[in-house]
Amino acid sequence: MATTLSTETPQVDPCCTPGEPRGIDAATARDAARILKAIADPNRLRLLSIIKAGQDGEACVCDLTEPLDLGQPTVSHHLKILVDAGLIRREKRGTWSYYSLVPGTLEAAADGILLL
Image (tube, rainbow, N blue to C red; front, side, top):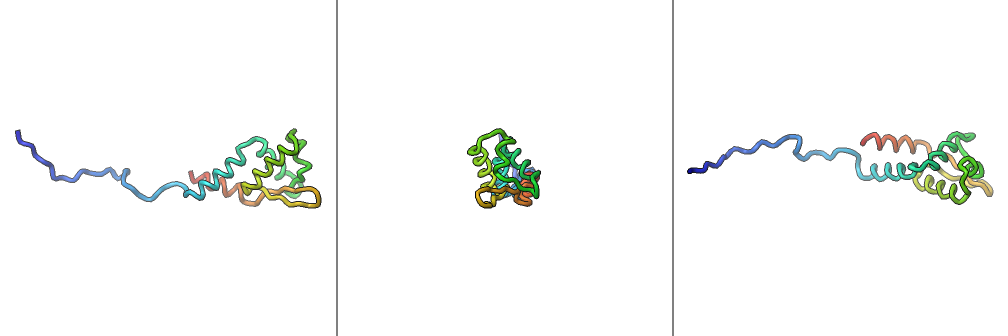
């Protein structure tokens, strides 16, 4: 019984050939994840909403504890997470801190997420 060897080159499926990487880059993914993690808490979402709805788009820390029915240390913790994520900024005025949204941050995060 004789064995014959084929000299034909096997066909490669074009969908399996390496190409340009698709999807978002690592930096965009890190930024989007940081923002998603920050807003993945109902209290932080409510804080963002209250701040946005405030007069001139800002709110004093003294106005943020009562609507959430949380203690001041807990609200401060949530605010710090939002500040660290770059979603809001804090401005000290005397003994009070005022918070406002950082323009474009949520929109930029949404754009990054939509690339998924």
